[in-house]
Image (cartoon, rainbow, N blue to C red; front, side, top):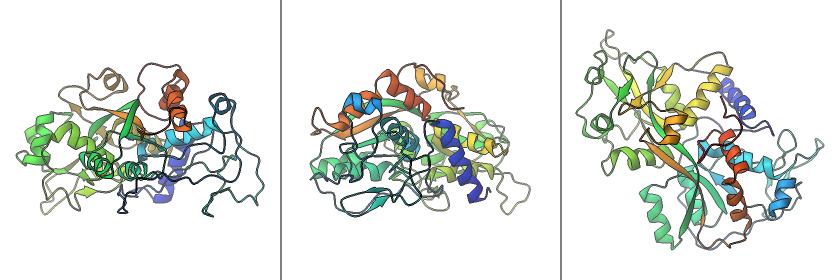
Length: 372
């Protein structure tokens, strides 16, 4: 397994590749997507930044200032986009080593970032927690995939109506070791593996005889919400899979576990390959991080119902397990609010280019190059 320090360094390098306009900092790789347990008030929070930033020409043109810039959060996979929005709205500031960062009115500070981007977000609240923060009025805008049924019920219970504006797309993908001879699976077979338990051997999928070790994400993660929405459709993951060690917290961890491609049990002759799921563009970024470290990630994404997930098949929706990524705001957000101005820019041609550069599929073709 990669040393955590090396992995983190590669992550930082990748963020620089994705968004060369600024230096990005990512979160610790093994943080679990967990929801908060606090009550959800319906009143809006009005915390403001007390230290001025330097708005870009773009920000000035659409009416964004250092004082009215909305609080934005999102899922792990959209952190590069949240950071990309920030870097497009503000210019770097020349800083002395004594600069303390951005002061908030609750006396907390966000430290200066490398390159002079004061207060740039450095971690994501993650999918479910981001929805909870928006429902509670603690943020103005979140960039996330489709919500789970649990999240929808939380919003209803809090009396908050959410508005979803499509800004990009992703694909739910199933991953295994690159050494596994199996290249494809059907949705029905996935259900048989994860829910019914009627398929337990890779030979049933055309591979060599050996047990399938199905790994699942935690229930409150964004990728598991898509597993429920797109594949299980009302069925549940088998109880024995929905707990450790088969339930994996953290998007990076489940991808890296595919490299432990052979798990030897009591019989040393038996090869047992793992099966997991994640999202297409995030898996691509992980492969780039490992390639930067000259250690290619030996995993592969399986074709589903005969279609291999690619940027092209996801954009055309030929690959069926496609989900939307949304800018989500509260329905009562004022028509001319800064959050709505940011959303309007995100769905413009220039905003879609930033979406693409951040590693997500776009709604329509735009100029520029996606991350490789």
